[in-house]
Length: 327
Figure 1 (tube, rainbow, N blue to C red):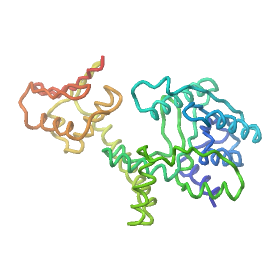
Figure 2 (cartoon, rainbow, N blue to C red; figure 1 turned 135 degrees about the vertical axis):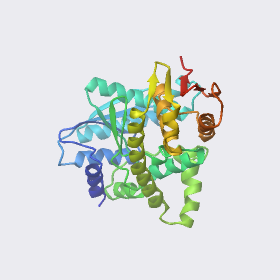
Figure 3 (tube, rainbow, N blue to C red; figure 1 turned 90 degrees about the horizontal axis):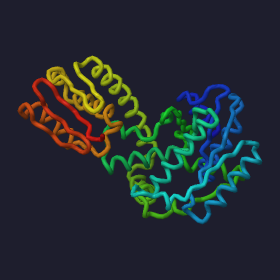
Figure 4 (cartoon, rainbow, N blue to C red; figure 1 turned 90 degrees about the vertical axis):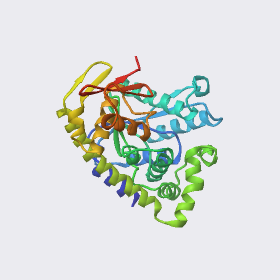
């Protein structure tokens, strides 16, 4: 039963503790409405729930969707909080969808501080994990990106849990139909002008012709990649902590001798970790950039420099110096 899968996912990934306080991100779509009902039916945890709805004002139905979620929460006896923003007016060059996601996350973070709740539940399901994996493969991703959507992650002190990650979209729709529970449908999900929708509507049907079990196959790959990444990440942090280095506010110097003693995979992971410490992420960097750094380490003369997006990497006498240009 789908209720059993929901409960087992929570236990498997240790998503909840008894008497947890929890913000539920509910849009009004089938996935988040299903999640809301599942949490209301939990009997093993005495949870304190706050339903949070972000009205992005991007569609004509946005206000009606907000009122719908408010009404559902009233019927269920769940506290409801909403915020309305005109995302189009706040759009500043990033993708419109990403702007909406950022504003929604900001809303959740403010609620977390306001209600002193450190945990947020989001309704990503198994199909979302697979679509995200395919999007990242097409755009380009390292091992970290191929983990897909994690059952549990953190952002600025907020623990984000995803208790639906082992449940298929079709199962959710079937449960809602059987239980005669209404929800709202975002019509833009059926427009193939969006990248994710192209994956869902065009690519996945072709892959299912080749392998009818493709969703579970890719999902299992994401879980295996996650386990491998956790092992490699721990080994990288351990090696990085032991390696000879000097750190400043905008730079890190790493011993070339110590780096060269590592295998190529570990060198790349140490460099990636150093960059993440300096600037928070490795965005705008791809594999050719890291290949340049490898060539700098092994083949180029002292005082050579590699210019990268937001970074400068210099080979000094005995040192590799990575400098952030974001200041």
